[in-house]
Each structure stands twice: as structure tokens, then as C-alpha cells.
Image (cartoon, rainbow, N blue to C red; front, side, top):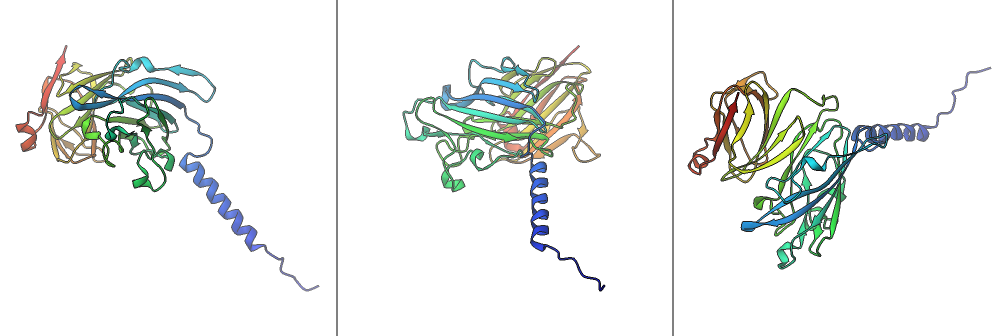
Amino acid sequence: MPWKKTPHNTSLSITSVLTGCFILWLMLSGSFANAGNLHSIQMFAEKLPGGFYGYRMFQHIIRQPNGTETDITSRYETSKATVPGPVIVLKEGDVAEIELFHKFAPDTPFHNHVSLHVHGVHYDIESDGTLKYINAYKDESATAQPYLSYKYRWNAAPGTAGTWPYHDHNMETHNGAEDKGLFGTLIVKPANAPEQDGVAREYVFYIGDDAFWGIEINNATGKQTAMGSNPTLTAKQNTNVRFHLIALGTNFHQFRLPGYEWVDPGTRFKIREKVIGPLEKHVFTVKATHSSQYQDVAFSSWLLGMRGNFFVSR
């Protein structure tokens, strides 16, 4: 009997391959069932004295996959909005669902929209935090009717570990009011990062065109303290401290911590200063051995007094 070739369903094979590729993409993008925690967050955007605005944490609850809930709201300043806004800490694999409430008095048309736009992590078009003018989809904001909110969903998928800014994109102009205080920080830790990595304190610093704006985190308790502009930093001698620098505004900055050197991330080289531009970031760790003064030695920044004390005590 002559050999006969078995018919092959080409369309079925192509469909199977495409289906497999789609499933793999979903898994890699974190769209499948997430193995991490769900962070349920509520934040307010509020007016501050002097024509500034800020974000305020109202509630932060962590829900683990097994259903256990932990309320970590007490780690934040909850009585008032701060500049910078709250530092939100996730791990790769976590998802944050954030409800932002509009808390401005709607006395001018410029206050119609306030939003959250984040860098570095995954989200769909619903959570871009921009106006329809930008995204060609819809206005993604808490709007001027008092206490009307908008919900965002951020996915800290594998590969998103790092320090990232979030900020308003919609108030007053389609570029937002980040220059008036509506900015904060998202830190995504690697999935395998230990709960305690030997760093006693974190200094999260935004470098503006005329001042440093900082938040200090005590890693033993998780407590965050908003320190205002050009604050004095404190550390115990011989403890490790980590600086998170994010440039804000339009200028380039030249950060220096006299008497200290650190490894430039991604290299094997030690440096004593770092130049960073708008929305660039630089994260490094040093052992606090002696007091110093952090400073921006770019010419215009130095003239504006952009410096502050780093006090190390025994």
C-alpha cells in the first residue's frame, strides 16, 4: 500500500501558537493571577498654604493572597498633605489599587481635574492619569465636584523594581501641577528582596529648581516623616543609609555629599558626585561614618542655597 501523507490543519496550528504566545505575554506582563499582594490605597489631593498643593495618605491596607489584611496607614503622615507626597512601597508582583479624592474647593476652573500619573510600572489606558486631550480616550482625574474620586491600578510586574516618580498630570494645564507640590514616589523592591536589607534609613529626595524636598523613612518601623525643603538629615554612626534622588523641574543638578563616595549603579566605579536631569533618578547607599552637607553644586543651584546638613551621631 503506498504511503499517504497525513493531512495537517495549518490554521489550527497557527491558532495554537498564537494562543500560546498570548498566554505567555499575559504571564510576563503580570495580567494573569498575581502572586503578590494587593495594596488598597486611598489618597487625597489638597490645597496647602502659599499656593501649593499636596497628596495626603488616607488609608493603605495590604491584602495577601491568603486573605490576610494588614493596615499600614499609621506609617504615613495622615493629618495633612505633604510635599513630597507619600512614598508607596511595593514588591515586584504586587498590585496597587489607588483611589484619589479631589479635595480642592472648586472656586476656579483650573481646579477641575487632579490625577496620578506614575512612571516605571505597568498599567492600562484607564490608569494613565492624563486628560482625553493627551490619551485620546477619556479624562482620568478626580474632578472638581467635591470629594469625587478616580481609581487607578498599578501593576509592579517583574522587571519594574526601582524608584519611580508619580505626579499630577491634569490640574491647571495638560502638564499638571507637579511644580506646585503634587508629586511623590513609588519604590518597587525586587521580588526576592528581604524585609530588612541592612539599611537603617531611606532619604527620598526630589531635587527641584530651587530646593531639595525630602521624606525620611525609618526602616525599623516603616514610619515616614515629611521634612520639607533643604532639611537636616540624621543617622546613627556606622549605619547604612540610602539616598533616592529624583530631579524635578527643568534644570540639571550636580549632587555631592562631601567626604563620601559610592558605587554608581550599573557600574563598578565609585563616584563622589552625580549629575542628573529632569525626572532622572539616582539611588545609592553609604555607611554613615561622619557628618557632612549634601549639596547641589550646579552654579545656579549653589547660589540659591540648595544644600542641607547630614548629621551623624554616635
